[in-house]
Length: 502
Image (cartoon, rainbow, N blue to C red; front, top):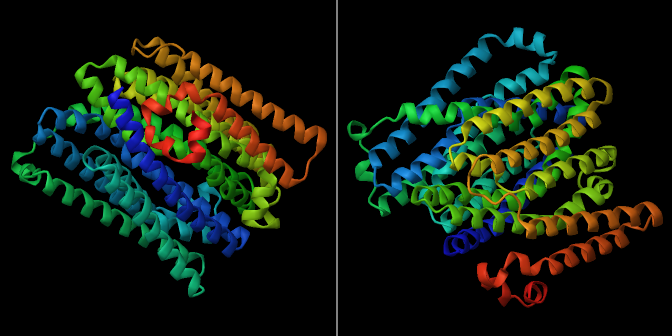
C-alpha cells in the first residue's frame, strides 16, 4: 500500500505535467494542421508516420528492457551492468539509425516507386528520416529518467522543456512564413534540443548520486545476452503499436490521396487524449513494479495494478465524453470546416483509445514478470490482424476504414493481453470486482448520453452539460473504490474534489 501511494502520488505530479505537455504538443498539432494546405499536411504526416515506424524498429524493444533491467541492477548495486546496458542500447540505436538513413538516401528512387509517393512526400521523408534515431534515443532517455530522476525533474524536462522546445522551433518557422520543408527542419531542431536537455538532466542526477564514478568504459559489463534476449522478442510490441498508426498512413498514401492521410492524422492526436492519464501513470509503473518483483512482493504488484487501472478509467472518462460523443464539434473547432468529415474518424478512434487506457497496464505487468512468450504471441497475432484489417478496409473505405481497423486492433490486443495476464500465474487477481463495477458505470453513462443525442438531438452546449453531469456522476459513484483518502489524501484538500471523492 505504501508503494502504491508513492507511485500514484508521483504519477499525479506527472499527470499535471502531462496536461501541460499535452497543451503544448496539441498547440503544435493545431498550428501545423491549420497552417499547411491539406495536401501538404498529408505529405508531412506521411513522412512523420514512416519515421515513427522506423524509430520503433531502431529501438529493438530496448526501452522496455532498460525499464526492467536497469532498476533491478540499481537495486542490487550492480552499476557496471546498469551502465553497460545503457551504453549498449545507445550504440545500437545510433549505429542502426545511421545505416538506415544512408540506405534510404541511396535507394530513394526505388522507395518512391514501390510506395507510390510523390516528390514532395519523398523529400520530406528524407528530411525527417533523422527523426527515427532521435525519437528512439529520446524514448530510451525517458525510461532512464523514470529510473534515476525524481518526478519533479521528469516533469520539468519531459513535460515542460521538451514540448516547449518543439513549440518554439515551430513557432519560429510559422512567424517567418516558412513552408512545409522549413517546418520539417523545425521538428528536427526541436527533437535535438529535447534530447540534449534529457542528457543534461541525467548527468546531473548521476553526479548528485555519485554514480558517475561507475561510468568508466573499462569497468562496464556488457550484458548483451540478457538485454537482447529480453528486448528483441519485445520488438513485436513496438511494431504492433507502430503498425496501428504508421501502417494505416502508408496504406492511405498508397491507395488514396494525401488528403485522406491528412484527415486521419489530424484527429489521431485528439483521440490520443484518452491516453493522457495512462501515459502519465505508465512512466513510473514499470520501474516501481520491477523493484517489487525483485523483492518478491506479488501482493504489492496486484494492488498497484488494480488501483492504477481504476484511477485511469475514472480520470479518463471525461476525456472520452468529449472526444467521442462531441467529436464532430470538437473537430471543426480545432481544425476548421475543411476537416468536418474527420469527426466520425475521431469518434471511432476515441472508443479504441479509451478501451486501451481503461484496462490498465496488462502488457507492462507481463513484461515485469518476464512473460515474454505471451507478449510476443499477443503482438504477432495483433500485427497479423492489423495488416489484415487494414488491407480489407482501407482500399474500399479510406480513412474511415483505417479508423475502424485501428480501434478493432486496440480492443483485441488488450483482450489478448488481459487473458495472458490472468493465465500466466503472475499473482494478479483474475478480475477486480471494483473494476467491473466501474466499467459498468462508464458503459451505462455512455449509453445514456448516446441515447439522449440520438433521441433528442440536443444543442452542442446542452450535450456538453449532459456530458459533464455524466462524468461527475461516474466519479461520485465510484469514489469509494479508488480509496482516495488512503492513496492520495492531498486531493481531499481541494474543496471540489473533496466533495466528489468523499
